[in-house]
Length: 241
Image 1 (cartoon, helix red, strand yellow):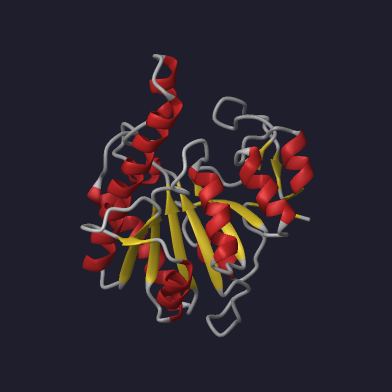
Image 2 (tube, helix red, strand yellow; image 1 turned 120 degrees about the vertical axis):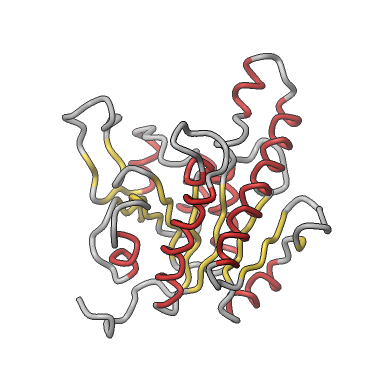
């Protein structure tokens, strides 16, 4: 493969879990991990690909823990939205130090630290080569950051939604505990929904299916996989119609 080859995807929405920024124990924000992600995004931008990012909050807050102790669901979800903004700012800082021009937009108003999410403004940032980091989920409780990623990908005209994880695709069972787990190269949206593979929540998958948005699940930390996927190589698991 040569760098003169044409990339398959010109604009991507990258969904990162909060754990992508976590320290080795799975919690908090590790600046070194943010710098590692920055290097991967710089490589993608070097190919001329527009990049928008939605990031989760699992490294700082897990709403399920609050719910299990009787916390109100909406309150737990709003706390999660705030945690995504902390991650977004950490990622912004690492990228700016790495000479990437970024803009952070939030679905929850917080004018002192981020722009409000405005679709046309976000698209303009992408057209100017800026990396757009989208925090605050959808701005509504009861919706996950997976759903936010699917929604923003469609709003911004992304060619693909890439869910970057620490596993190299979708398996029929947990590959961490089952050495015989089978990895899928391709799944239809209905397959993923019916098998309850927990790739993304059902709302996010249904949004992708209803709007024919391909979803690619790959290992963020595997060298060159993200770049190869952008050239259309068979990396990870593709979920499409």
